[in-house]
Image: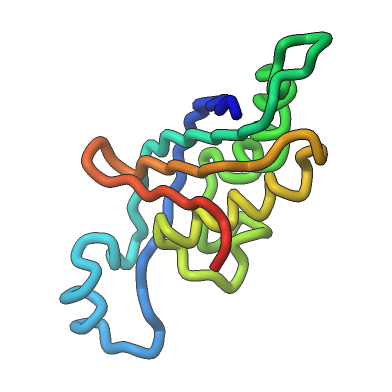
Length: 137
């Protein structure tokens, strides 16, 4: 089994805010991330697929094709957008890094051929904070 990772980058704004809580409770739990006027991140996205190399190409999956899928299905929809308001596949979802990673997985998994499996979505929200998602719920 070989693992191939493609790294992409996007910038996006969001707000962590539970509408069922008071403003004070939101600020206590989410701090600056509950800012009324949103806040942004410079996200780094690592998409890892796995499989066996094709005997004719030597590729698990063409890295250029993987890049096009990521750009078309994720980056173009999220880059320089408000995750709470502008991204169709985030509608109605809490925009934590955890939920963003799951949503990205769902976008990409359905687009990959049967010859390759999505292994991991690693999403860096900051240089010190990242999440990893390996599928399943």
